Every structure is written in C-alpha cells, then in structure tokens.
Length: 101
Image (cartoon, rainbow, N blue to C red):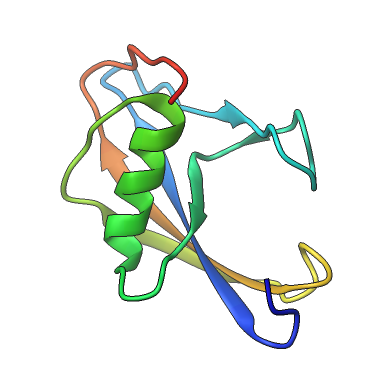
C-alpha cells in the first residue's frame, strides 16, 4: 500500500427482513477482532459496487445484488499510515445464512 496515495474501500451494509445488521469480526490488523461491515479495498478497474459485492462474497459467502450508495466517509488518518476513503453500499437480503469465505 502506497502511503502517499489515497485508498478507496467499499463496505456492504446488509439488513435482512428482520432488520438485523450483518457484521463480521476483522481478522487482520488494524482493529483485529473488532466488528465491521464486510468490505475491503477497491481494485484497479473495479467499481465500488462490484468491490462491495465481491468482498461480501469473500468474507461471508453471501451473494447480493443492486447495491445502493448509503454514505461516504473521508477520514484520511483512520488507518495509518495510509489515507483511506470509504464508500458504504447498502443491500437487502432475505436471510443471513452465512459462513466464512
């Protein structure tokens, strides 16, 4: 990761029909073992929507479609030493039958 360039992350905010929110536990540093939305870095040539859905599948085994932008957080000092800009995309799922990806 180049600390002199900003990085873009895409997270999935997932609710089901019972208004339950899907969270994962982070397995990597920084913030290891803390709860987070499923998500990760946007790859070169990838849209934020595609990145959010890819990360959701990789981290939970869930498929989703039609992500909608729900917010953007620009906090350049959140994950030092990089500069991270985070897009949150919302998706709706009928059920949260998950497993680790």
